[in-house]
Length: 208
Image (cartoon, rainbow, N blue to C red):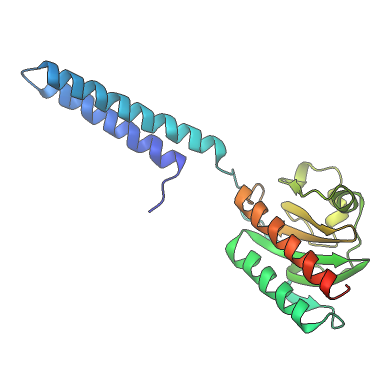
C-alpha cells in the first residue's frame, strides 16, 4: 500500500496525539520514559514534515475532462510493419499506464499515427510544436486553459486539458494529451522522452 502526502500528515498527527495522551495518562514519569516520549514526538513530527514535503511534489491533477471525439487507432499504411509495431506498442503503453487520452506522432509533415480520442480534422503543427523540435526539448503544457497558443491543438483533440510535446528529431515529434490538467508526472516525461530516442533510432534504420 502506497502513502501520499496527505496520509503521511494524518498518520503523523495521530501518532503525535496518541503519544501526548499516553504521556498524561502515566502516573510515574521516569527519565527513561521522558526520553522515549521525546523521541516519539520527534518521530511523529518528522512523519508530518515528510508528508508536507510529499504534498509539495505531488501533481495537482484536476478533474477528468469530458473530451469530444472518437476513440480511434489510425496509422500511415506506408510505414514499415516493424516501425508500426513499435509505435503501436508504445502508444498503447502510454495510454494504459499514464493519464494520456490521445496520442499523435508527426513526421516530416505527415501524421503517421493517431490513437485515443481524436479529432476528424487534419492536425498541422504550429509554433509550439515547431519550437519543440527546433530546440529538441520536451514541452509540457500543464494546463492548456491558460496557454495563449492552445488553438494550435484544436485539431489534435478539442479542449484537451494538458499536453506534452516530445521531439523525436528535427522533423518528427510525439504529441500527447492528458485527461486532466497537471496529470503527467516527471516519471511519465522521462519514460516517454526515452521512448522518443528509441523511435528516432528506428526511423534512422528505416530511412523514415
